[in-house]
Length: 162
Image 1 (cartoon, rainbow, N blue to C red):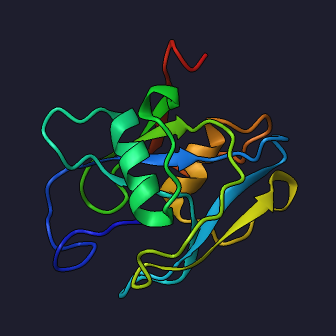
Image 2 (image 1 turned 180 degrees about the horizontal axis):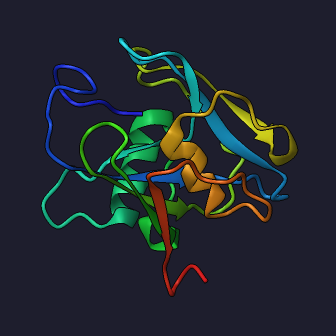
């Protein structure tokens, strides 16, 4: 849920990031947060954010963002990229990796109160609405029966995610 300095639309270059799917050990629920970014309507979101550092992989960005946003520390080596999602709906290219974290039921803390109103584990059969677009599309890379993608959103599975 991290945003760019100056707000979510301050920079107009391409965005590259990762959305992190953190299932519970039984695989029936997933971690989502109440996304409360200034200037945007409230939505529900997976943990995640931009690839920030030179040489940072999607898995490393996912592990770093998860720790920054929730306090949950999971090893990047255990993260798995399921695919990538490409959209241009914000007027610029946005490439989001769908990253599956190892199962965890660790307590998620609100570490960025300006962007998140709280974390919950919700049943996959009762995902809250409205979902932040990139989070919904990342979940679609993982769910057995995903909702259709809107026009202008493209997904690409990885060999490692198939």
